[in-house]
Image (cartoon, rainbow, N blue to C red):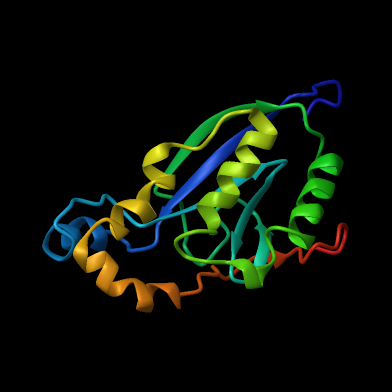
Length: 169
């Protein structure tokens, strides 16, 4: 990176944690077509950042147990330096994005990616990703499965957890 360049690329890595099963089974089970069950992460400053049951985590891009992303969406650029960004993440990890606050439908990786994208670029992540939980819960089968799905805690392996301690990744 050019030391005089104050602009950094921001990408959204999108993974289908169902590995294609949602596309095949959702019409039968839910009565609606889902293209995937999305896990997202923000890639900036050469690292991938995501939220799950372990809290805020980072790894090299594509370095989780999920493998390569299904798609990469260019969210634009940011002027937020790595130091300021790490302080921001540390603050989030101490407050609103602790691991014990993770909830599959209401407070998840996509909520985190959306908030971080807005902080970095002023833009949200695509609505078809953030609207997925409401889509699933709008179906009778989604409502029937909710107690089971509420107990699911997603934490892709392969990263370093922040736990709100800046500089101790």
